[in-house]
Image 1 (cartoon, helix red, strand yellow):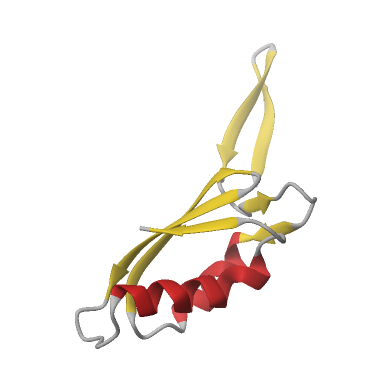
Image 2 (image 1 turned 180 degrees about the vertical axis):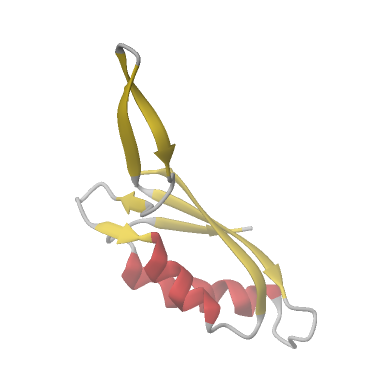
Length: 98
């Protein structure tokens, strides 16, 4: 959202709302809206916190904090997350879990 107008003799921005609709864009042209990733992550019981970082058109990093109540291993969670999110990214995108 942007609000602008004139003050004295120049154009001015009075209000701006940043990062409103973050979008990941992939090499093949497919786009992923961050809110979709957020909706998926909100329903996960084994993850305390997750962060998505697009490193390139072909790689995304998921920084994950495991919920201390889960009995799943890191390997199980990594496989689960890769399977859960693979359809949200373009074909061939490397998903790295940290």
